[in-house]
Length: 410
Image (cartoon, rainbow, N blue to C red; front, top):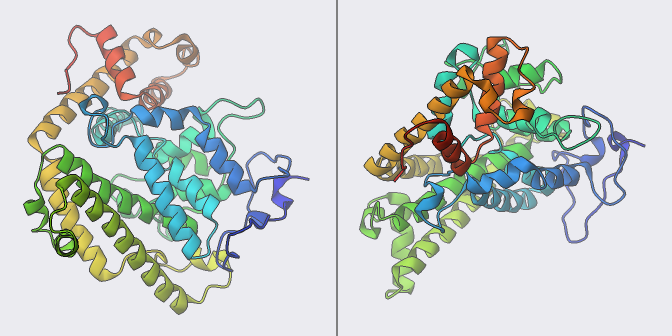
């Protein structure tokens, strides 16, 4: 008996799933059929495979906003992913969705991020401009379908269709009804990694993903907005008085100070974070229930063809989050020190790409051996995969090995 025919296990203490939730028992299955696990659902197995993957471990040394050596308490891609997963499970449980699927997508959503955060992504996209570009969402899909090489029977992790769909459509539909790129891809086109895999297995790129995938996406927004407040304050990029000028945080600060007028700043920042996260989760749950009541979905397919997200913030929370994002953009992401470090980090990535393109035998043997007889686009794509998988410190170490001078990133 393969997993496609597995009966869903009822877990003690968990509410029954809603009719519009993804059902493990009726999963679209895996690209390669596997025997049923006697103890875990297909989505639980996806989650476990992601946690045990090499790419997941490497997230511990990949930049979220601050380079790893700047301090022990700043978020990395790994800690960010764990926070996203926790929020996703909280949302999924309240909305009677499959928590394991939501968690699996949340844990895997950043597996394709290269070293040095978005600076590394921009650098790889630039050097790959003539070869299909680079997109971390598409690369996450590529990691779990091809680049992880652990199993004897297949490349990748052989995850279920539902988990792959959630990764591919992390930001919603990729194409419109006419097949034209939309949303984040309207100007740059559908990423090469998404197009390549969609030819192997149709992920229905023109529809919205499951409610579980939408939960994981919104949890991502909730997590990074809040932990960037914590990390930015820790780095000294703004003060509590600055936060008091941001409407979303101002009300929370006033509320805390009325109850705890002498609370020290580190605890105050934590109180701000935890209360904002709770507020955002409750807002999203309230809005999702309104949208679900209007849609009246009977099956998960009704979520996919709704034409609009079902899991989302209210208009008021969206506007407040936009103001918070603008504050973080101006005070943190565009901070002069961060910008200088990220420019140097981008240069490291660009140098590595040009160096390996000129001398591919400088890569480890098991990487070099796969491209000795491929054309230039194939070689570029392979080198891109290699660099995208690097941690920050490995990229720095490789740059020091190959070049006379390496930026200090401080």
